[in-house]
Structures are given as structure tokens and as C-alpha cells.
Length: 236
Image (cartoon, rainbow, N blue to C red; front, side):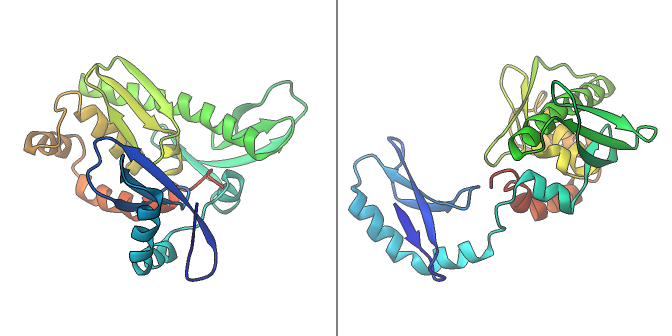
């Protein structure tokens, strides 16, 4: 099912049926698709009618979305990554090696991705491996500094969230954190570490996060400003 926008482009429509959904609702997904959340019993014809009724709103929202971007295209425009509280220049090379790997050169200032063949899938797999290593070290650093303990850390490809913390004290982070500035990367990590003590977003949580990150209000605004674009990286 597709929605033809005002420019004549076909935009995929993803219908999500859930028993707990009580009314039809439209949103836009991270792959720039229209997402229709639909009660279980509602017919597809009713969904089509609902979408048509909201055509003006959808056209306006779709026009504001950042374009999907491949990881290689992103690095051509932004050849850098964040890790260990610092920013490193990034270079991608084709090398005669058995397995993709990365190393640091120029006295640790440049991260080099070494690949037998340079293509999008290989770049994505290697940069996610680097993200796992880098974020594991950064979380451990902040947890030790704050005297906190967590059980597990996973680095995943979340659709829209930067991170989460489970009731079992497990932390999950989006690999795209390495595309943020060091201060915003640390803000997300500190946000999830604060959930180890306060599992909700009540006043005690925000007071604790203010202690962890005195610039958290500014960092929240900066993260909101860049999230839509960054969440669409490596989805093309």
C-alpha cells in the first residue's frame, strides 16, 4: 500500500495492527514511510479513507523530513566519529586483509576502517563493531566514575530511540551515538545510567541527571535538533 504525496512520489504505508490500539493514528517512520496504527478490527478501506482525510497534514510532514542517507554518504560529508570523549577523523581504505578491521593512525588522531572491498554493508558492519567497542568503554568509564553497576550493555540498531535501561539494569544504546558530538553522546549515556537509580522520568530522575550532566537542558535541545537527520543515516 502506498500514499502518493503532493509531489507525485509513492510513499510506503506500513499498517500496524495491535489489539491495544483504540483509534487510528498516523505517524512517520524512520525510513520515511507513513505508519498507520490501527485497531485490530478496522478494515483496510477505512484506513485508506483515514489517510485521505489527513492528506494535507501528511504532505506537510513529509515535506519536512530529512532524506534517507547511506552510511558511506554520511561519512563523505562528515568524516569523523566520537569515542572516549573525543572526536577522531575517519578514513576508509580498501586493504588486502582477510577480515575487515579498524585501527588508529597519526598518533591516535585518525580512525581507519580497513576493508577488503569497500561497500555499504561492509562499512555498516565494521562501524557497528567499532561502536560496540567504543560505547562499552565509555559506559564503563562513566559507571565507574559515578559508582554505578549495570548488568549488560547491548549496542543495537534502534528505529527511533537513542537508548534504554531495563528493570534488570541492562542498558541498550543506539550505535549512531558515535555520530553525535562527544557531549551529546555522554548525555545519552548519563541519561541511561541515571535510570539505574530512577526508572521513571519523575522529578527525582531529572534532579539526578542534572547532577550527572549540568548542561543537560542544552544537550536535550541539541539532541532534538539533530535526531531526525541522524536516525535516518544507514537506512538508505
